Length: 348
Ligand code: PMV
Image (cartoon, rainbow, N blue to C red):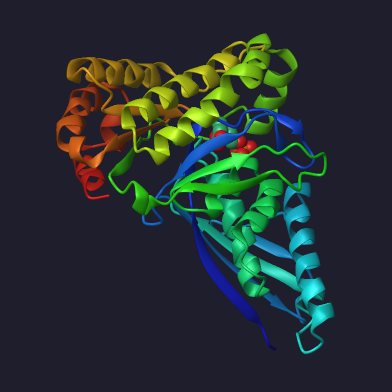
């Protein structure tokens, strides 16, 4: 039987200005615009292969070696959009095979813990959408594909681009202006580095969708965040990135992480994503910045306790040694994060 296959990898992105809150949960339309940094494909990534054949009898998905249901509405919405895009091409060119009518088999694998607050759904949906787009030979307009990936997982839309990426929230009710755009390529600020401190690789207990709904419904602080804080920060952070102003970028990144987690704490009942170890990292980063009398490191935390820290290459050797004592004394870290793994980070 004839099978068509396409494979692709998609990287993780870590938000520096957080998306938190949906104005339309069906279409994954956000209550605020957000900004992220896409990590290198050599680090955290999803590898996805998509295959289709006239002989396949049902759509199937294998995630990290286990067969998973493809029944979620999110995934179905993505598949429906991609099939429709392919169908339009087939209607315009009768020589094309009717792939839009065929079932799909998808195999996907993460090289990092899934659903542990390390943006696995972002890389996962970005890889799913781009692998099928490649299989279908769809025109690669990344902003357009980002709108499909957004329906799978909001933050996935930002993983379609490398470097520094903005997700513009848009205004329209149908979401056709809620898409990702690149603010600056990696090459425009190559000195920017990220290190991830894996505090825990356990699955988070409040999913981001549940957490957002609770925050939107119950937090007063959240209303202030989306009305005044984030719109201003969105412009300031884009300016800091384009100007390669690390001092400003770092301050905005740390403030926004704190603001997001404050709205989680202000939800009722409260949501705790960061833990005591995360707080030690926060204190340590501020102590380091005070010691150097300028911002040399910025922390940020997604919906989990793991720290992502941004810094400039030139500061790496003076920065990382500060973390050794912490790593050796924090319970549970010794085994997961050793001097050897730190060494590895120096090469990333
Ligand atoms: O895309 P989701 O539904 O996994 O939500 C992502 C939420 C955060 O990671 C906390 C923030 C962000 O902008 O990525």
